[in-house]
Structure formats: structure tokens, C-alpha cells
Amino acid sequence: MDRRDAVKYISVLMGSALVGGDAFLLGCKSNSGKTDWLSAESVAYLDEIGETILPRTKTPGAKDAQVGKFMQVMVNDCYEEGDQTAFKEGMDKLNDASKKKYDKTFMEATPEQRKELLIAVDKEAKDYQKSIADYNRTEDDKGSKDAKYVKQKKSPHYFTMMKQLTLLGFFTSKPGLTQALRYTAVPGKFEGCIPYKKGDPAFA
Image (cartoon, rainbow, N blue to C red; front, side, top):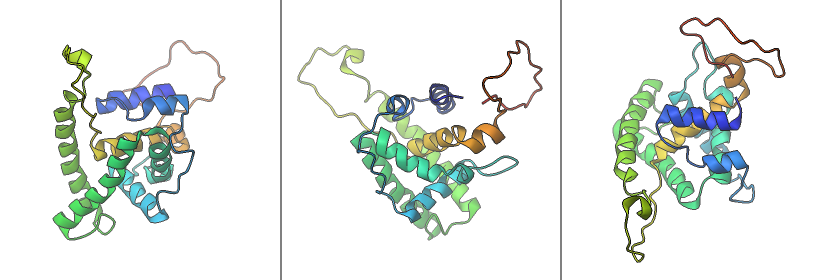
């Protein structure tokens, strides 16, 4: 699975365009490659968020793919400034939500509490995404002829970005490609017809 296929896969899975997808495909950088805006503790925090979204089962989980570090680089190199701010503030919002709900930080919460919290936040994120879909349409889409009418694009919900990056980071990692998907080294021989059983993982 190459970058373009991965971006398409995550977009279909999430039902929305991947934030920073164009920069990811083109290899563009927005902050001169500096990735020290997160402490080691914050990267570990993102790892735990990712692991709650995509836990280890018979196959590796998000922590095996080091999605925390992946998120750090992606947000730094591929996100616009507004999305970067929304993501970073979202880390605090999620922690605050955990404290409010369980009187514990996210890192102190049990796996069951983390899962319950993220299910609730995921619903909140989906409702939010629906609410900004029309807002973020261009004026041409709306047929407006008022050149003076200008508005600022709203950033996606922070959890939408976290979820997208968890999936993208996992399915472009070595553990995700070789252990969660069926990996065939390239170049290899061409096979026009391959037997498929229901439940077989997709090819990497």
C-alpha cells in the first residue's frame, strides 16, 4: 500500500477527506521539520489514545506502530496552522473531559473508561463535522456573488484528526502492513486470480 492508496483508504473509512492529506502525498513541510513541540509524555499520551482506537488483539495495535510519533510529525509537517492549534488544544480538551467524567486524567483512566470516553467523543466529533460541512463550502459552491463576504474555514474536530492519524499511521507502518494486512513483497510474480475466503485481510 503506497501513500496515495493509504490516504484513499482512510478517507473512505472515515467518510471524510484526510486532514493534511495533500501535504502528506507531496512531502511538503510547514514548520521547517521541527518536531519538538511535544514532550515524550505527550507522545506517550497520543500512543494511548491511538491504542484505545486501535488496540492490540491477534494483530499489533497502534502503540506497536508508534502512532504517537507519527502524529507529532504529521501535525507538524502537514497541517495548516489552524488545524495544528485545534489538534494541540484538543489534547487538553480530551484530558479535561476525562477529568470531568472520571475525576482522572486520560492516562490514569482504565482501558474501559478510555474506550467509553472515546466513544462519546467520537459521536461529538461526527456531529461537529456535520455542522461545519456547509460552513466550509466555498462561496462558489453556494453561488454567492458577494465578493465582500469572507469567512474563515473552521478546523475539523480534534478527535477526527486523531482518529485519522491513528489509522493512517498504523496502516502505513511495518507492523500494520506486514501483520495486520497480507503483505506481498514487490516485485513478485503476477497472479490474475487469487483465492479469497471471507474474513481474509486486505493486501498491503
